[in-house]
Length: 592
Image 1 (cartoon, rainbow, N blue to C red):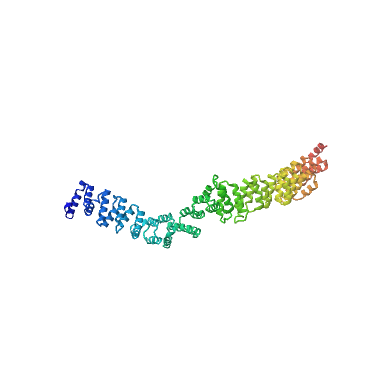
Image 2 (image 1 turned 135 degrees about the vertical axis):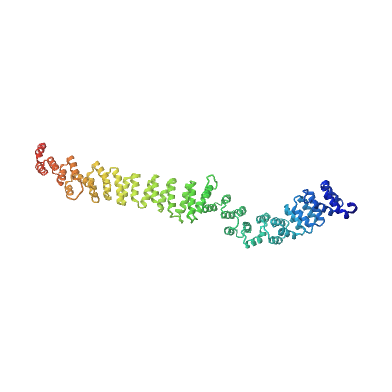
């Protein structure tokens, strides 16, 4: 039928081919139409089955037939909708076809990622207007690959810039930056980036790219990295690492990219910058990481913390966390160096009470030889607490010096006599200071050492009667009655204690100071005279007993005492006053 009259019979043949397509098979029918070079017949036949066919050849032949018959919209439709053609084969066919409308080719290349081939083909064939159509109307997301392709074919920069500015749709800026960056043409997109900034963009990718351009062109990059808050510090920092490690440090510091910053500063021996960052960062866990004993960078870092970062500090929180970190890592030596740097050398923290105290405590526990030097130079620490720790640590000379320097003389004396056990040195110190509390403490120490006369001398100088009970007991036991008299005479000036007056009367008796006793008894006193009289009688101190019993009109005991004194007539008189005259002859007989 086709051979006899193709034009007249073509429609019937297409109908028959369509009806018996499954029976005859598309391959044979396609060969039939191609044998007679009937593109129209092939187009109509395949058009009836292509929407249901998954045969790549059917799809390809339909595209081919549609192209040859001028059915460009149908070519577009199949290229866009069908998933059953060979994209590489279709792409090559459409390129060879050199259509006036490149939209089918654009669709295929866009769908199957032949963008680079598309750009190359269109540019080399002077079809740049279709490149604009592609990114403006078909798929703006492919703009980065298009720009990359144009750069590969050495397209004029102004053309690329204009194309980029003409794209109104969105596309991944990161990809665009990557495409131009890997071709070392980042600066090309600067006008477009500036335009995005003017439009109020806050996209990190825009500012990442501007940062990179600023770095590559050395256009005051340090200021941009410090002032701008919209770039991604990790991305830009990574970009800077091989170009300028210091700029990488700035970016990483801006974004608190701890691990990256530690790595870049270690690799480039930027310990001073690392130290400054760590001090400002105030993260104990991060300190623990960098101060790991296994780290080969630890010593250099510590040196810079002490020499640079800490002396530059003005915020007490920075110092506090750094000190805690050193303490946590048990870096006692470096901690002392650090504290010396900000306390002994002039700084905002020179007078800080807590830091001074910490320096003392650290030295006491780890470097005792430095303590005395600190004492001579400093005064703003917790004196009582530090002196107490010094005593507990056996640093008696240091503790004494602390107390002495701060006029805590009684505590200083306590160190001398209790811990250093130096009574002689204590006496010299008391003589120099000449304060009641100091003499009193010395007196107690001397008394404990049974140096009764010295103790009483000290108590008298202190005018302190408070320890009278112990003084009386010790002096009586040691037979130091003369010294006891002096002490008790001082004591009764301020203390009205029966014990004091009682012992004074007895001491007068023991020292045979009867005139003083008479004078004492004639004055107001609170002594237990009867008790003293009985003690004196027992000690055969009859003259004293006579005075004592007489002063309280105890005639009976006086009579007995007088008999022992041989004063019989007086004894009789006393007995009569006592109303016991019947016993007088007996007493006289016994006495004889």
